[in-house]
Image (cartoon, rainbow, N blue to C red; front, side, top):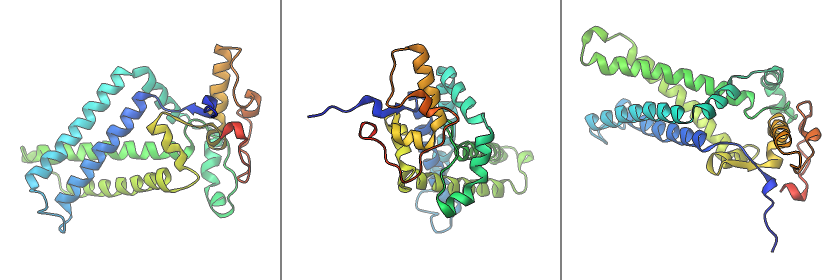
Amino acid sequence: MGTANPRAHIARFTVAERLLHWLLATAFGVLLGTGLLMSVPALEGMVPRPVAKAWHIDAAIGLAVGVVVITLARARTIGHTISDLERFDADDRTWLAQIPRRIVSGAPAPPQGRFNAGQKLNTAVVAGLMVVSYITGFLLWYGERDTAYRFAGTINVHDDVMWLLMILVAGHLYMALVNLDTRAAMAGMVRGSVDRAWALRHHAKWVAEVDRTAAQADPAHRTDRPVAETAATSRPPPAGDHPSPDER
């Protein structure tokens, strides 16, 4: 019986990153569900409104506290994650510009880092919408205690943000669970590592960086492919290419 090749996979997400992801996913599920219970007429009454509101507020507080605690506990790790997400280069701009072409012809995307341009843009938009939802949510909560903080349109903005977030999350779930070309990424959020051959096709610049770092730390380090083959200037193999047996 053969043994699994550990180099067929590459570490992608740390424990702290995965905790943040699943904390956000869980809290968002509760926030969305309770929000719908309070705003959609067909669902109102399924749960008493005071109960739904209490769950909604508790989820919002729990998410905020959890993010702060994990970030403070693993500040260096989260700092690196933020740096990866904020870094936007020429390949990222090309990745976005070529989306229509890739949809029509299936052309390969330019090489990407640990996060592709779409993931970076999605993270920025979601973060911005979350900030707006917290501000409007606080005003709605505090406005019930002090009418001076009741502003016309606050609830409409809060609800509109919820619908936008729901659309983005639906797209995220499609890419993670349904789309055959990208759902392999889900393994990174479950076990922390992804298939190396998949990573080379979608995040060649990141794989090259990991290999260079490993080679500098340990000259005897060997990977399934030479560092030169996954250099930042390389391009992903054509869609029809298949990984060699030792990469599967």
